[in-house]
Image (cartoon, rainbow, N blue to C red; front, side, top):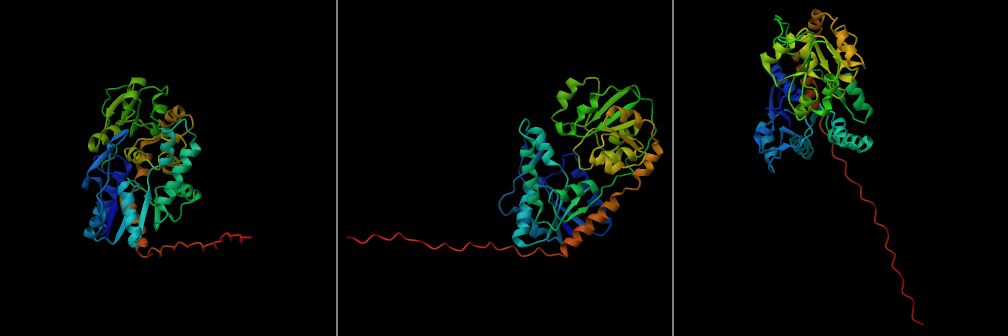
Length: 364
């Protein structure tokens, strides 16, 4: 099976969408499937305001169609709702090619947080309506967690299927913990430094030891100014990131809006317990397992997580693999190809109303 995935999120971006697609593509090859990507790297791009590392592609007329014809895929998946996603969606609808989509980002929450003081019901409701319209023609919408799946269904999305994530347990693993250059315990957070990530909720806590921050973003300069006692390590990847995870005592996840959070699994695979708010993503990942603490008092969760077993964290993460994630993805996409897109509904024209002409009065 050959699958063409259209995504507006791609390297050099460092986020859950890019990492998920990369891992699934690698595992798919081992399962006998091939995944090609239609990405901004193929076109001229423009930076997204406030997100300079995110560059949106606006493909020339006919470019996406030519790319689809050249790839000759057995199935199409649209990973994001940006310009490339829209272009592929429109093309598939015109040609009546079945496709699947995935829901990665809670844009309504992000938009509402940036457009304050406008009423949230205006910004959020409009965004949800737009997303429903985007995903409606797809044969299936893939969601990372049961909570997200139920929420989308409650908001009027149809054919929502579960697509769980995995973790690279070979890279993210417990390692020797040398003496730290900073006082312990080490409380670590990893992710984009932007308003929607709620990082200030972590940095403002009164905790013993040291707060470590890995990541970059538009909020970094202000966070460094407001919370100067924390250690900001910038963006890390690969072995450098894995070393930092393994050295930490607690991983802190302050976001209330993430749909999943791969960083949660990376921390657990490294043997590091999680402290978080009882938001949907950490509730789905951790549940009732003794591998972290969820509390509306984040400081209390951080201190409670120190008591968790690092061995339990590692064992729990090993049950979630990228191979299993790829198998489920391929199954959903294959099912979509077996269900042709229905004929578009023809618009019914309203009958013409009779025309009444005003009668001229007879001359006297």
